Length: 314
Image (cartoon, rainbow, N blue to C red; front, side, top):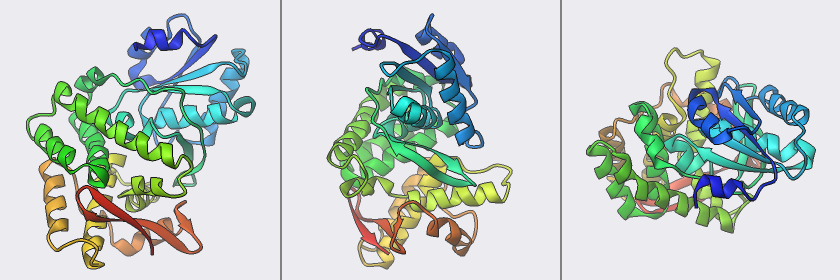
């Protein structure tokens, strides 16, 4: 079903969009109320959420309104969180415009913002009404942003689909045409939704989706606190986190020898980083404050083999 038909069922729609996709977003919005935000990690804060909430209030949004987020994962995180708290919760939906958002951030209902350089420390579970995926948008993405999204795709396939993992590597080596990526994007979203549906509040099986993210979020914290000139993107940090998880999986005897080298080689082949930007001990504070920590232990995702993972407390 096209986006226009999906929106017809809602009595009022309010559009929040990333300023970088303004032309595309305004075509969707038409005469509907719309608000541009600067969707950056620095602006992913409660101040921006409150800006959206105040705009909804001034614009006359009631509890039957739909908040439509058009942009990448930061946009959907901010808009989803705003929707979850405005008048005790209104509906929202996502039109993800990046590969990373299409395969990961826009689905699953996790919303939130950063606090004091810690990633997604404030947030809520709030399921979107729908996620409208348009893979044609991928044609306009810079290569670095496309590869960041590919890291999240590969993460999903390491969890549950060896065949799609191999296909993704081939597509990326051939130039990552959006037509070739389309079935893989939809497969990644399908796998994530299947996992989320069984565990919407991240209390069990859904934890596998955190593969690579313990170290990814710690890297992002370290970059923010050290004012790194050219920081890794979220997807690049996830790629490093996956490589670290693979090494630790071998060290713990969970994976057979050779897995870490293969995964690192695959990521490098795609143009993704695999090494920590700092000594591992420098990430300790961020890991200790990670929201996945419970009772002094963290639920860490180990890789048994490509297509199979296991969560263990460490």
